[in-house]
Length: 133
Image (cartoon, rainbow, N blue to C red; front, side, top):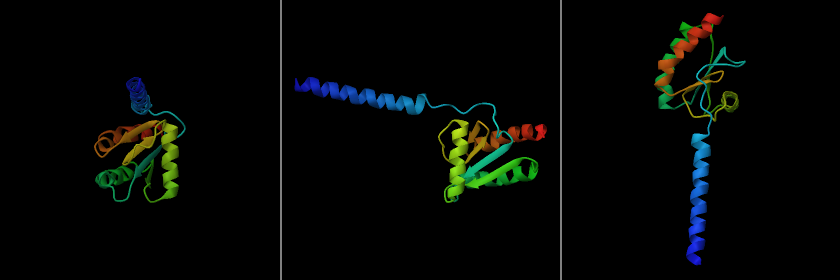
């Protein structure tokens, strides 16, 4: 009888863990492929002071602010600035995701993450925003 109880408890733990893993990984909403929403014209770049990945993206972002002066690019440090941290959380919630970390760019519901993807993908979005103006 004791073995049956241990087996049932172990089975329950495995099922509970699998359910939690499913909710976290499989059921999480994916970032949208195309922008839509009220903040489509605002480009949020979130970074952390001291983050080596953010430091690698910084020259690219500075170049984009110079190259696209008519696009509203907001560069916000979120590790040490509580106000920016609140914006970070709110903008990600509106995009339908939990804040994934930095560096990150959010345009409406479009999210670009990481030191590789931001330089590879962002400029196309900036060109589209500029054309709308």
